[in-house]
Length: 454
Image (cartoon, rainbow, N blue to C red; front, side, top):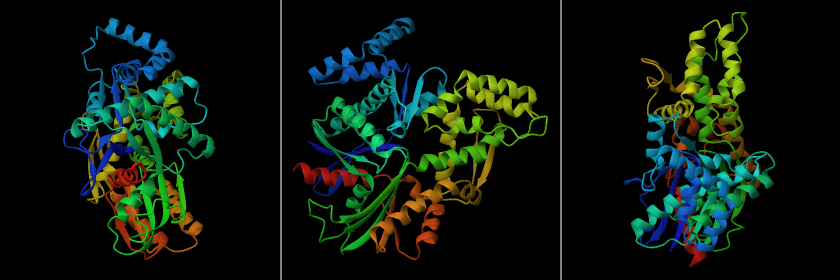
C-alpha cells in the first residue's frame, strides 16, 4: 500500500489516500501527530529494537553483523538491570516525554533527531546511531499505521527540507538523505521517494483551489523554514511533471526549535544566573547557558554535558555574586532538565498564539519558581531567527521574478500572530492563508505518493 510520511522535526505523521482525499492515520491514541521523541532505558536498546523488528532477513543479518558491539552492550544492560525481553524499554511521542520528565537521569532521551541529520564532522558511529534512532521511530510509526489499516505499507514519499543544514549544504543533504533512505528501508519500505516539504504543503492546498494562482508556500517546521513559489490550481493539479510550475525555492535550518531556544535563553535562563554578575562586576559568561538550551545541536549538548562545563560551573560558583542562581543551574544540569526547559518554552510560544501573556511554572526545578511572559517580550526575543525566516520568503519571491497572488503558511509555529504580522509587514498586503499547520505536509506527500506510484 502507498503512503506519505512526514518524518518531521517536531512531529511525525503518515497519510494515505481515500475517496475523500488524504487521510492521516492515528499514531498515538486518536492523535494523528506523534511528537518526534524517543526515550530508551539505554541507548543500545534502540539498536537492538531495530534489528529485532526488521522483516527482511538478508537486511537483518547484515545489520546484526554490523552492530555486533552495540548488541552485545544491549545484552549486558539487560543482564545487569534484570530487563526481560517482554519488558517495555522504548517509549515514543508523549509517552517518551512523560518518561523523561519522571526519570531524566536514568534513560536516554532524544527529541527532534531530524535536526541532527546532515551535521558536519559526524563520525561513522554517530551516523550509525542516527540511522538506528530514525529507523526505530519509523518502525514504530509504520507498525501503528499498518495496525489501523490492516495492510502493509510498502511504498512511500517522505518529506525533506530544502536544506538540512546551513553549512556545506550539498554534502549535508546527501548525508541526511542517505540516513533517511537507510532507515526507511530498515523500517520495511520497499520503495522510497522524497519531496520538498513546502511543495508537499502546496500540493495539499492546491486540491482546494478553484482558480489558478501563483502561491508563495511558507512551511515553518520545527527544524527548518522552507519556501516555494509555485503556480498551482485546476490547470496544473493533474500534471505529473511539475518542474516548470515550481518557480523558486529557498530553505535554511531555522525553525520553530530556534524560536523555542531563543525564548528559553532570553527569558528562562536569567532565572539560573545568565544575566547575573561575578563578584568582580564582570558579567556571567553566557555560552554555557546557550549550550544548555540549544538542544538541536549535538556539539552544544555534548559540551554542556562535558566535564569541562562541570569544572567551569564549580569555578563560577566561587566567583558568582549570586551563587544561588548558579546552584540552581548546576541542579538543572545534574538532573538533565534542559530539554524540559526548552519544552516549556515551546508551550509558552503556543500559548501566546491565543493570549497576550502566559504564566509558566518551573516547580519541577524548585518550588514556586516560574515567570510570566508577555507576547511583546517574546516577539523581541525571537527577532533574530524570525528575520532569517522573512529573508527566505523575500529571496524566493526575488528568485521567481514575480509577486505571489497569495501566501500560504503552514507549520506549527506559523500559528503565531507575531509571525503572521511580521510576514504582512515584510512582504506587503498580499492575502495570507493559513493551512493545516500540522497536517498539510503529510497530506501533500500522500497526494504525490498516489500520483507517482499508481
